[in-house]
Length: 249
Image (cartoon, rainbow, N blue to C red; front, side, top):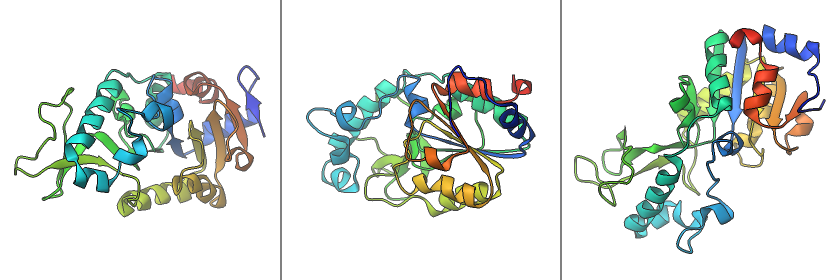
């Protein structure tokens, strides 16, 4: 089923959304793009003639941690200016409304937490959190610009961004939490994700197999669209407000 911005959402869909008890929202780069956050892939990620795929790797960090951290300092300077948009804010309200609500995000910009979301699974990590390369402890480092490049832990060891780099596996604990939420939900909202990056691209199929209703919100059709019960094409901030129960507001 498909719907576009400006077309009345069928009452059946509204009622099913209203009656949902266990809701999962899966967000991708699209929701952050509405806050002006670039993807940092392709042309958006080009920095001093380096591509993101060349710098966001463990190999690059081991070879030249100063170079990698200079790139991340540049990125943090851009992302730090961004503010949560109405899409982020709508999800905060939904978390307060539904008895069980889980937000799974592919984004590392921290905007969901900045907006006020609490039950968030940051499946690819958080750009503002770092991990000690010796002790493996994590902590937030939010200085913009960084005071020291490369930054170090109190123990003296280098720290790295606590994000999933190319060639690394997702945290199995976070994957397990995400799967538990997906198999038990009765409504999955798929917001601003292209549906091509694995293994997250397979999450909607998990929820579908468990019997959940799938609603996609994205500016354009994606590979996930045929799997969904309903697709809304447009901005998440506008469409979420149209879709979710008025009681949320």
